[in-house]
Image (cartoon, rainbow, N blue to C red; front, top):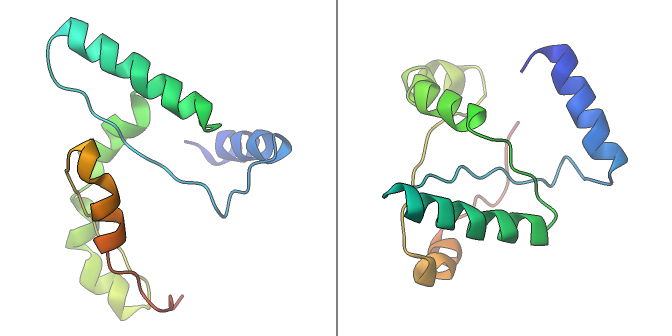
Length: 112
């Protein structure tokens, strides 16, 4: 997203009452035949809307898929200058989602 487009997008979200320091981004992928993918997209779309979210389409996911391994290659450089970057992928059935969430260690503090 270009700087100008990003600024406009963020301005719109802030005017809608979004706290941009507290937003969450989730990439959701679908597998299966056309009918199954269509049904799952519909279900996920309803959940996203129910919680005030927006769908951004395929673009962010496609870009993430292309770039997700770039960050680990520069991780040591980033750590040397006081920044942290890494990629983490987790898969679990919905029935275990809270187990994954509660079992994920969180840092006591973040050093920026």
